[in-house]
Length: 81
Image (tube, rainbow, N blue to C red; front, side, top):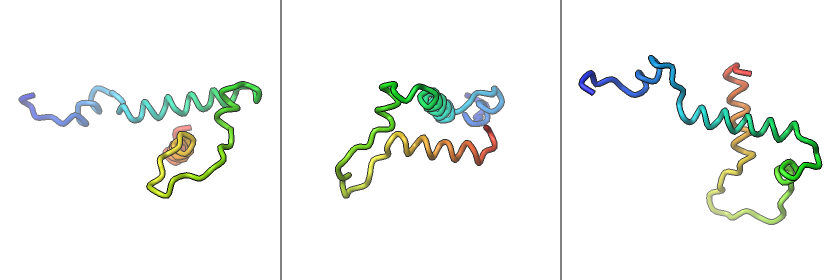
């Protein structure tokens, strides 16, 4: 505490990953697991299901699959495949 070091510096020195990176990694790992399952599996069917209707005109909430697509693109551009 007396050294007034930033948390980012401490994480880098100790080699601790950011919590958001860990969540992203877990999300992509789970998505890969679901994609490798049989097409008849209930989790995969639910993930790929089309929902009819309209979304509200307000600010749209992020859908899980949109976040996965964004994370996948970010992962590809990082060169960490």
